[in-house]
Length: 96
Image 1: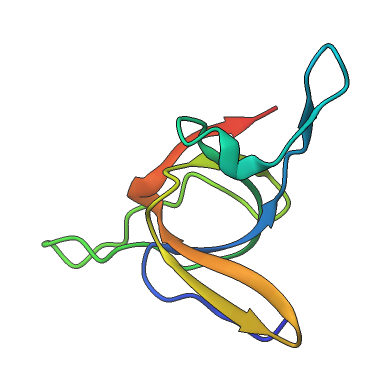
Image 2: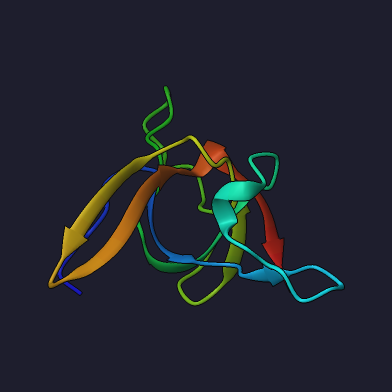
């Protein structure tokens, strides 16, 4: 990948969840708008520059799986792969 995020931005590879009901009916991701988006962190910026000139520490690392606000960020395509660039403030949780 050739994307280097700036500031407190994070490049995320979206992970699609496919679910089926108990009776075996396939439910695409678009059926449940309440669910948060899940992805794998592919690249992390250096951190936001604070008013005193120091950089804020990033809370996520490359390789972690995260949950983030579904409607945040911008979608980009690099080398045929789709990614989302989000701000660290849009990350809701790290999946362990």
